[in-house]
Length: 196
Image 1 (spheres, rainbow, N blue to C red):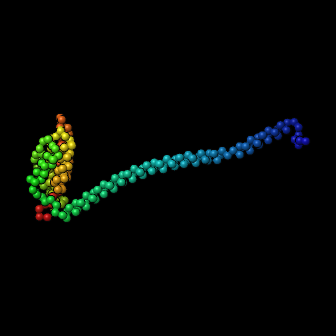
Image 2: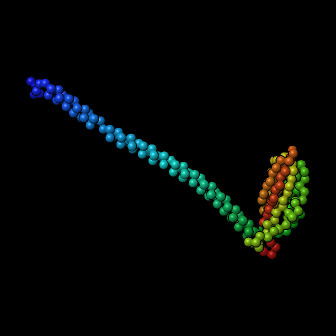
Image 3: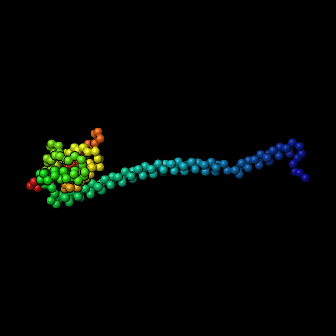
């Protein structure tokens, strides 16, 4: 037989048992664990985003440092070449400018320029002594050339720097003029001053 009294007590007791079962069921469904795991996933995503941004910044910084290192390596190579050239007998100041001008003319004809290379602009070919070092002088030659072939103009610059010892392209200006290209190029060369 039943240990419950008959009537409304049985009904109340049944509601208590159903309520207790519902509480037990809710207790067995760990929502707090679900919320904690969701919070951990969100925190991990935030941490991942922060790490990703930090990595992108570090990669950018690394690229910049690599470019700087390449620049330093190139400058170091140039410095070593200049130091080696400084110990050897480099070009002397005012050394046969007619020979140098003929080399410019030969470079122009070898490059296939339509017009012959004439004398450079006035004031070119003169040594200008630098204030920091009295042992060397910078000599510049400025040419303005017109030719329909851009490749011939570039070839002229290349051949000129190859044929004249120590010659470098200092500045270049290029513009179209009608059907031709007008190239203004300034060559320079560092020369030892006589008596050093």
